[in-house]
Length: 412
Image 1: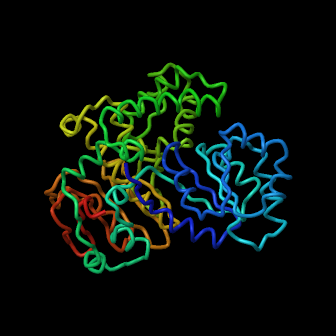
Image 2: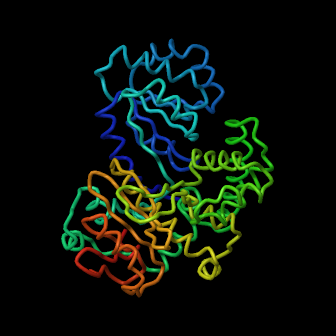
Image 3: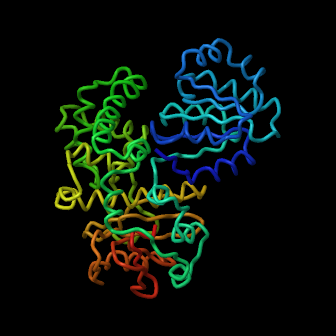
């Protein structure tokens, strides 16, 4: 079993030079604790899921931080809400000193609320994901995503900057099928992966969700999780979901917020800025990890996946996650949306940041016709975008027209 280098290591080092405290947030088992172990040996690490460490800190958080003033890493910080005001006091005692604390957390709703209430302006936040395609292959962020992040506005320059993909289509589909959670990749055993994912879902329900939301009806939420697979890639219809699991529409909305806040679902809002056409305004969503999605859909292998009705939506979600994860790993500030008109014209992903507005379309095939790209080409023209991107499974990048390029997923 080998260790895969995470692209977040550089960003963590950079943030420690900028902020007194850095928070690593993300789903359970995504690699946050492993990333803590990349810190130098003189850092002291405490795990709040360990009863000894919890007692040591919980008895008097302020005293603990007076005795441990520097190079302190606290894992699963959301387990002890009292740690956040104590961190604020400790940081303000020596506000100009950087890189003193690192905390991790697996539950975004409570953790981010505590951070915003106690540590605003004192902390840098890094969202950690399961393994990216680039990380599985031992690579850094792709030249395409780096060009987006750096604001390269000339489409030919973007095309010229791209390094060739070194992986086969079979390897692309293997990653798509398996998803990115690190432990199954490190074990590299199909039976282990199946059992691990089953236990992961059970633990998520029985421990994480039950602890965060003690009044939640776990059986209804279990049904909701099963329905999430079929909802991935769809515009969210809260009324249909509510009827399907026997809850009220507000409860169904709450369930989606829980799934998004605990990092298994990504809600993507509709793009509505400067639009002149009637648009669909309901949010869209995807399961964040394709392997978890395929487990919930009971898809057994790649052949079954390619013929499954959800294959296209699964592919879209996987590509969207790869792009968002790589941008996050570079510390880029941006927003993401999807775009759909009432007439049916659609763009799968719209990135909006200091680099401009970049539409991205996902196609699972190799041969893409201009007719297939009418929606994104019209969006580029209407929104005056510097360029647009089509992620596909072609053999090489191609220039479709003066503002549209096609890029194989293997190049990401």
